[in-house]
Length: 190
Image (cartoon, rainbow, N blue to C red):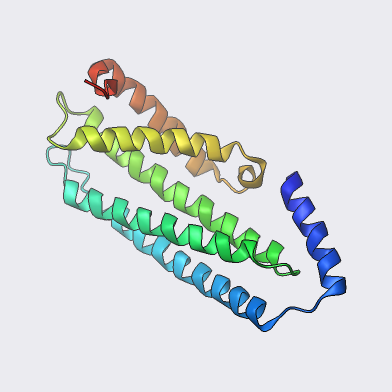
């Protein structure tokens, strides 16, 4: 547990002795729990959608991929709402809710990394990037960067399974191959 979580837990313990949860806090807690359940469903949808992204190297279905990314964006938006709700609570349910939230955050990133890996595998087999894929490539590059930064945080480090770490490493290797084949992909500003 990192220092901010420990501090938050101590503050909550002190408040719990001096104050009973209000009806508003009960409502916020129930919303947070409800939203966590919905987020879990969205992650399941995102996982199913990522499996629909075509593996056929001769045909990259960008519409399937973009639907996958739209679901991912919805998950992140929902995550912000959930984190905000949990941040408003001051009782002993916060650690449990944060634990579930962290678990789902890692699940989102795991699915994203698998999606990026699938995209990179397809693109690495091509001599030229399909029309419209440059933007996707840049987005996936940022996904890997963000995942790498997230996974080193103590709060998430112990939650990451070996398959996700292997997918991240494989994605980074494939990314290196793609960059070697097409170094101009990284020229964002022209």
